[in-house]
Image (cartoon, rainbow, N blue to C red):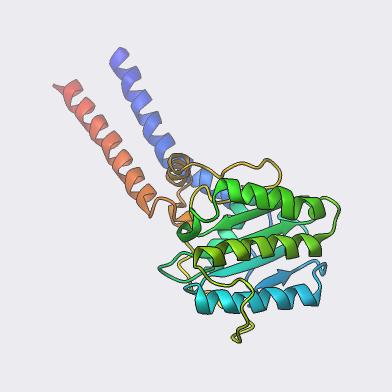
Length: 261
């Protein structure tokens, strides 16, 4: 009787291992009221709520010309939406960053400032190449002193302008480049970076906390079956999952063999 119970438990375990990633992936991809990840319009400042002035958009485009030319292809993009639905702003920002491929491939030096006006939230996420430059301390300072005073009052244009200026200064200082240098270049954003962001580089105004740790990121990749979406564990989630399944099956076969003998 005990042997049968153990066998049944193992079979149930296998079912859970196989079924959970499928259900988890569906749950992630079909969140109630969640917004689809927006496509890039080819603009450094993509304003979907018409709350950002033309002068601010031109300024952001001009500063990105300097970044791309003198800062190894670095890019700082801004996306302003009304809402991202029921998704966490950390997750949505990461998906936008990955899809748009901000920054230069190999340098991983892109930055995204995302604002959701109706959700009363915003988030900053940076490529792994800038993780030391845009540390938690620096992002917290930019959030509290440059963005939050205006964002909380509904002055989104000013929040974008001041937040972008601080981010631009931090990146330019890292590359020892004048953040206000005059330069002519392409006025339109074109993705081409690796899209790889640094885990822990994002900062939300809602709770001022780091995004998920590397261990939890890999765990989420393992259980939701979408490791390639974040890039945080370089595709290892699928491999780990496969090894886990193989191990469980092997244990079942060993147990059956012992029971027969």
